[in-house]
Length: 51
Image 1: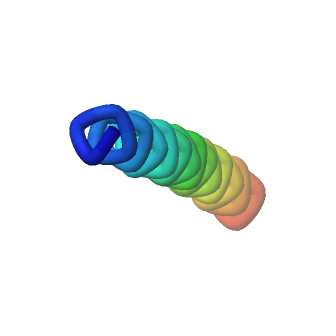
Image 2 (image 1 turned 180 degrees about the vertical axis):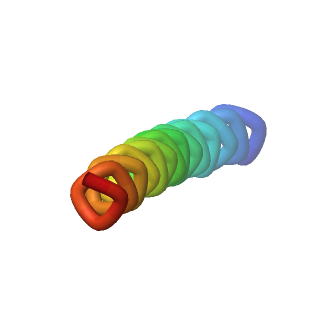
């Protein structure tokens, strides 16, 4: 019985970790996107200032 409980616990921890990893991945991807769009904004602003 103990073994079964331990396996349950392990698989539970595993799913939690997977979810956290997933969240972090999404977060870092959206951060990347923010950087990219801010870079685009900067470029556009420079163009405006030059013209």
